Every structure is written in structure tokens, then in C-alpha cells.
Amino acid sequence: FLHHNFSDFDANMVSQEDEECVELTASGEPEEAKPFDESKSSGIRIDDSVGETWRIKYHTWRNQRYVLPRKFRLRTEENARKYSVWSVNFIILASAVNTKMLNPNFAIMCTPGAHEDSFDSTEPFGFNSATYFLPMTTLIGVAISSVFIGKLSDRYGRKILLLILGWISAAGSIVKFYTSGTFWGFCLSNFIFGFFLGNLPVGMAYVGDIEPSKKKKDEMLGALVGMFVLGNSGGGIIAVLMNDSGLFAPLWVGAGIMVIAAITTHVYMIEPGDEVLEPGVDEKLILTDDEDIIRPDIIDKKTLWNIVGGAILDNIGSTGLFPLCLSPLALTEFYSDFVGANPPQDPIMTITAYQWLSVCVALLVIPATQMTPYCFVKLGVAGTCVFGNFCTAVVTGLLLLIGNLPSTTLAFGFFVAVMYGGFPFTVFSQLTTGPMLDSIAPEDKIGFVQGLNNAAMNFGMALAPWAFGILADYAGTNVSIGIAIGFSLLAALANSPLMWHPLMGRPKQKAPLAQRKLPSEDEELFKKIVDGEVIDPELAFQINQERGFHGKPSVVPRVKPYDEEKDHLDDISKEAAKKLPISARAV
Image (cartoon, rainbow, N blue to C red; front, side, top):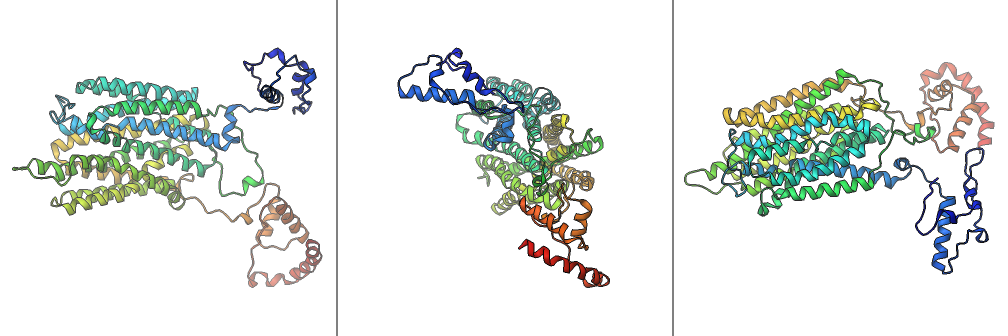
């Protein structure tokens, strides 16, 4: 029971009789509150009607209101749960936006003289390797911290970690703005504050805490990773819209977004705590299309490293599609070759078009998150992952082919169509790693396992573009993209064994609701009814009557063909005669 002192009332102003109104009975239930007797009050004298109204409300609130601890609101209040999940999704999105918000400007930053904010020098790197080294410094920090962040959230709580990371990230954006004068100064601040942008494993662990249903959990994890991918790809929209304000001005917007996200998390996020208010386990829960996830006691290390290894290969392979197919492939074929010609020509793709092309692809994450639940049902989680790996290889190969055709407006149109049409299917592989890892995570290792996932993903996203950028400088763009395609195919091959894992394969089709046994029903008798065996009709009537009382469907027996029942016609005739009084009584 919640007791609280209002500033308008002193604690002594409530009489002993009032205090006794909330005493518990022997059974532990609160007694009914005694009627409020103004004559027994402690001298409160408020003559005006407003004061009297608030006095009555205060008395009722203090003596009759029962309040659950806040963590139980995740199960008892739908809106509280919804707002809590939304606040987590938002802070994950805000962190992802800050991670890659300046990506569209990196190519300009690394071209001395291209803009007044460009770096004077990027030595010892060339253009491609310097362009990819900048985001690498941030992602390396994210990857390293992800190994520890999830485990720390298992120990100290999800909310406190999200708030600490959010506030420091907001301050980090401001620090990065003031260290943008030199290439290496900016890289150093990127690396340091990258440690505080790795909050995805905390959010994924939070979903694992609050949602017991496997089907809903997979959908929520897919939506959360979708927000992360959307922020990573779409954060650059801010940079494009602020072209006239400077290359580093979006950092101030990023800081503001993180402040809003941190405040929202503080207000709306509910820490699940060590205890969860579980719903009552009764017949109604058994007869649903959902099932609660059963967590193992220990981690299956073989499966764990299979998933993590496949994720690393997938992230390396995805580099061939994004960003290599955009820069340097599209940027060279449809812009640089025209501008650098003698005499210069009007490019097919302008710099602004290139920026919009790279950031608007993020919007395609939205249809991808909507399609994944359907694919989970049809292909299984692991099957969806393998399908995404294969789509990445195919789409990247088509873009490489188009990029090597003569540079025309038609070729550019096909390039954009293939990229935007195929990108949603390539995201499937990134949306499935979280649900697969969650299914093998023990209760006390959810954050740790998701941290490994985020670390693997960010190491791949950090090192692969930079390594491929160096390779493109020395061996050519086509060679780099071709190797990336090979990694995508290798990822599909590595993830294929997971399709036969019982928790990640195609879900088994469940029997209709009318053919599922309730816990209170006798298993042998229920099986006989469903199989169409001859049983006492009185027993069958009682079972279906009890089901009807609880709003459950009646048991539907299997109709046997004549060949199966021709030897039992005498028994069937005798039982049919017994059914007449039962049917009459039912009517």
C-alpha cells in the first residue's frame, strides 16, 4: 500500500480510525475501507467546496487505493508496456542515427578543398581508405563496448545502462564538433565516444525480459533491429538536409535527439526487475497459436559461434552492396568520370543525388520488418537468414554488372531500381540474428549473448568497408565487390545448418484448436475421442460440456472410413443406442 505525505496535509491530521481502515485480514486481503466520518477527523476544517472535495479524495486515496510496484505495470497495463517498448526503440534509433549521421559527408570531408570544412590532409590514407576509416573508428568503439555492455546490463539493470549511454552520447556529439578541425583529432573523438553508442544489446535483452511468447518476441526483436538499421542508414538524411550549414553541423541535431531520447527513456521505460508478474497458467493459455519460450540452463556454444560466425560473414558480404556499390562504384561511374573528363561533362548523378540515394535506402527497412514475420512462418528464422544472405549476393552481383555497362541515364535508372527493389530482402539476414541468439540464451545471459551479436556485427561493419576501401585503391572496385559477393555466399553456406535446429527451423504446423488437449482432461480418453474410437458417450458429453462452459471449442473426432469400422459395426450400434438419452438431455 502506498502512503504519501501531501504538502497540504500533515501526517498527524489522519486519525487512528482512518489508519485502521487499511489493516489486512487473516487471509492477507485488505478489509473494506470504513466510511469516512467527518466527526472523527483530526480537526481539518476546510469550508470551501473545493477544499472539501480534495479532502475526500485524499482520504479515499490514502485508505482505499492499492498500488502494485511499478515493474508489474509491464503486465497489468497495456499502455505502460507499449510506451516502455517505444521509448527503448526510440533511444536505439537515436543512438544509431548518431553513429552514422555524418556518413554522406565523409567523402567530402576526405577531399581536401572540396568544402571549407574538409580536412586539410588525411595522410597516410588515400581517398577510399580514409573515407571508410572515419566510420570505422566509431564502430570499433561500439563493437568493443558491446562485449561488456550486455553483461553489465544483466547485472545492474537495463534502464540505468541506457540512460548513462544516452547522456554521454549527447555530450559526445558536442565534443566531436569541436574536435573536427583535424582528421586524427576527429577520429580519436569518434573512437572514444563510440564506446557509448552500443546500446542495441541492452534493448534486445530488454525485449527478452518482458516478452515470454516466442512468436511475439521474434517480431519485437525484428522491429528493434529494424529501428537500428533504419537509424544507421537514415541518419544521413539529417546531413543531406543541412548541407548549407556545414559538414559537422548535424552533430548538434544528434545531441538534441539523444537528449530527447534519454528523457523519454527516463519517463516511460519501466525496468522489469528480477521478478515478473506471470499470467495465470490455465486452459486458455494452452489453446492459442502462441507458445512461451523455454530457456536453456546453459549456452549451446557450438550453435552460438555458428550464429556469430555467420553474422560476421554476412556483415562483410553486405559491405559489397552498401556502401561499395554506391561509393566508389556508382560515384565513379555516374559522377567522377564525367566531372574528371577533358573537357568536363555534366554528370548523370550529382553529389546531392548521391547523398539522397544513399540515405533514402533506409526507408526500405520498413517493408523488410513487415515481411519478416511472414518469412519466419514460411521459412523459419534460420531459413529467412539464409534467404537474406543469398539475396545480398544476387543484388550485389546485378549492381556490379550494371555498373560496368556504358554509363547512360538508362543504366543509372536500372541501377537505382535494382538497389531499391532488392535491398529489403537483403536486410532479412540482419533481422534474424537477434531472434536466433535469444532462443539459445539462458535467463541470466540474455544481455551477454546479444552483446556478442552486436560486437560481431559492428566489427564487420567497421573493418570490412575500410579493408575493402584499401583493396579498391590497389586492386580495383570490381575485385573488391566480387570478393564481398563471395563472403555473402559463404555466409549462406555457414548459416544453412541452423535451418535444422529445432528452435530456428520452420515451425511445425499445430493441430486445430478443437484437437488440442486441456490440462484437466485425461490424455488417453482425449486421444480416443480425437482418433474416433468408441467410448462412453456420457464421458464425451461431459468433456465438451466443460469446454463449452469455458468458451473452448468442442473436441472434433476423426471420421473413419468404412474399411476401418466394418469389423466394429455391432459395437457402434450398441453405443448409438446409448446416445439417444444423452442427446435428449443436451437439448
